[in-house]
Amino acid sequence: MQSSTQIRHWIFVALVFFCSGLQAEPTITESLLKPGVHVLMRHALAPGTGDPSHFRVEDCSTQRLLNDTGREQARQIGQTLRDQGVGFDYVFSSRWCRCLETAQLMAMGNVQPEPMLNSFFADRSTAESQTQALRQKLITLPPQEKALFVTHQVNITALTGIFPRSGEMILIAVSPQQTIEVIGRYLPNTQ
Image (cartoon, rainbow, N blue to C red):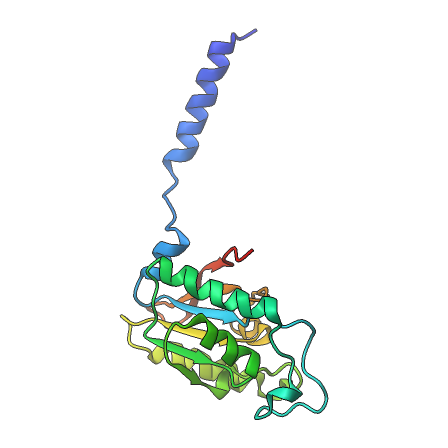
C-alpha cells in the first residue's frame, strides 16, 4: 500500500507531465486587441424568430426589434469593449433595424449598412452568394485592421457553423491560405 506522500508525488508528476505540453491560450481581450481579428456579432436581444410577414427592410415598424433588455445589452457590450481598449477600424451592419440599432448603441464607430449581412432566414436563395460576399470582404480587408460585423444567426452559422446567442461575438481571422478561422467566442456578461 502506498503512503499518501507517494500518492501526492505521483499526482504531482502526472500534473507536471500533462501541463508541460500546454501553452497558455490568449484571453478573449488579448485576441480582440490583435490586428486582423474581426468580430461577427449577432444582434442584441430581439425576442421572437424571423420577421413578420409584412416585413419591409426600410420600415422598422414592420420588423422584429430590440426590446429594452436588448438595447441595454448593446450599450453594455460596447462599454465593455471600450473599457478593455478594444476598437474597430470598420463597423458594418445588416440593414435590418435590430442590427443597425445594436451597432449604433454599441458606439464603436461609424456604422456602415451592408446588404451582404442582411438576414436570409426567410429566403435561403441568397445564402450562398451573401456568405461568399462576406468571406470575400473579410479576405480583402487590410491585414492590420479590424472590423465588427453586426448580423444575424443564420449568416454567422453559414460562415462559421456556429449558432450564436443574441449579443454573442465570434472572433475570426483570415488564415494565410485565405480561409476563415474561428479564434474564439465571447458573450460579455451584461447582467
